Image (tube, rainbow over all chains, first blue to last red; front, side, top):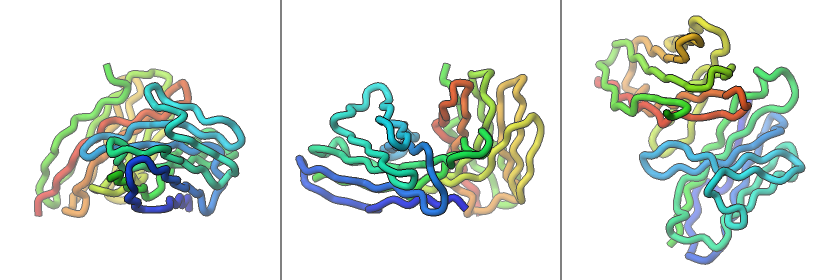
Length: 120
Length: 110
């Protein structure tokens, strides 16, 4: 299998607070993890690509100082939304690709269940 | 031109019919192609991956790839109401970046 978990599944916070979301690969080592954001009835928007032990690569328009990503191990990546505001309310989804093996086996993205963030 | 294009739908089919979902991509160097299903309020789940020209079947699902024409499709046979969801096409480009289409909404009427 290729199971990816996220925690918390849902969070409500006050404007100005920071929120940390964890993404874990439970039964495989993930060399690369991705963070997406999805607004209602819209498609996935890639925010950043995270490789274990190195700095994340952010997509254009995504503030790296606001969305802090840490990929400290091969099974854990965290996204911290700093000083959250109502416009940051969204569905945040992480995905992971396996490490090692052939290109074909490593390029499939397995998604976590997502975290719904509501900022009041 | 978008890198991965899908008809947003909605595509409506009666129960038991074949649903046909299409996707085109722009990068000729793309090597890996994926179909994901996303239910409302949930994250995407992988249905199939395909890497070679031709058809690949898995149960009621068949993925078709034509690299010369740069399109990939997904057929769902014997469609069920539980198949109603948004289907995302994803392409791993020659630059090793996975690009997702905007998705096609499918409704299967009972």
